[in-house]
Amino acid sequence: MNEQNGNPSAPLGSAQNPLVIPARPQPGGAEAHMPVAAGPAAAEAGDTPVPAAHAGETAAAANPAETASPVRAKKEKPDKPPKPEKPPKPPKEPKPPREKRAKKARGAAESVAAAAAGGIGTDGTGAAAGNTSVAQAAGSGLPGSKRVMVLGFIVLLLAAFGLYSLGAIGVDAIRRAADPAPLQAQLMDFLTPVFQFTPPPFGAVDENAPDALLEAAVWRVTNAEYIRMLQTKSDTPQFDTDEFGRWALPLTTVEESYRTLFGPDAPLPLHTIGDPGSGLAYEYDDAHQLLYVPNPTMIPSLTYTPVSDTMQRINSSRVVLRVGFVSNNSLQIDDKGGLIPPTPAMADYFQRYIVDRTPDGWKLTAVESEQPIMTTAVG
Image (tube, rainbow, N blue to C red; front, side):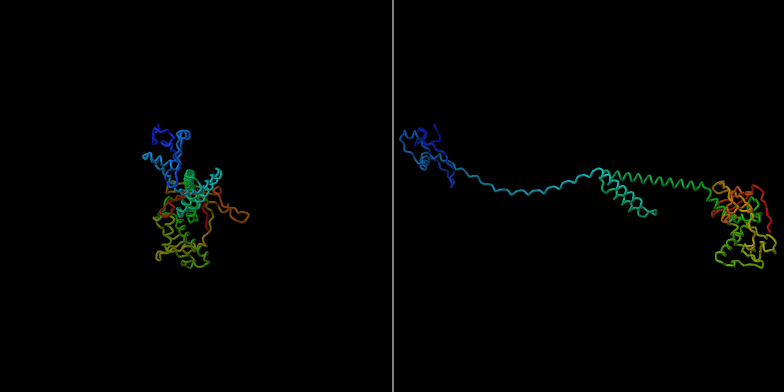
């Protein structure tokens, strides 16, 4: 039994119950049903075949409730615009081989060393520029971890160099402090006026000091003036002269020289030394506060040449200088006519000079003799 046809009792495919097959959609949107008559059954029943177009109307009239529902045509969706293509990514640069990176690291280290050597001056200027150069050189062409390693190595290298410099300076200072040669030369130059007259031993510089001390103070003044005359090619001293050709030195000048040699508290022994009517006498003029002294060209030359032997530090302010005196007859001349410096082994006798430090320099406080001094007559 077919519930979909108009007459259920009629045979399927007859005029009363035709077989309806949905046709394809028509352009107008309506659907046409094309009935198909059952051939053999219809022929036997004696029904006349119905055209397809009218068959549909007949089926509709027979069963109005069973009308075919229209089939909606699918809406065509507009094509979406194509997505823009992404630009291709640039290819990654290959990492340089380890050898090239090592070369870059060495180049950065060399740049840092050059910047550290040339960027900081001794006066402190250029320190900021030097540090900037170090950072820039260390940071060029190196990855982060290796850059930190290079900077750490540079810091350690500079620290080691600083410690080495401080150590070298300290060692040099100790060596200079332990080396007596510079101080010996300084004291020999300071005591040169005293060596001109080889004073006898004395224990203190007081009113009873030997005349050689006053003569040494005078020689210090007259020798400086004589050198000035030679330098300026002058024949006239800056001091007045008397009929014997002696120079008239102010007492203030003599006192200043005396206290430079023997201390600021040393008393000046003012008296006449020698024959007052002689050109070699040291004549004291109390009325005019003058001391007439011999012309330095008239003073006899030394018969002994002093030579430094040893120096002993008693404490921080006292030094003992051992000086040997070599006879001029023992001096030797080299092939060029020059004097061969004498040695302590050639000395005929020795003296010990006790020298104390003062706020302005040194002072001679005593002289000790190791062997008897050989006196030579002046004439």
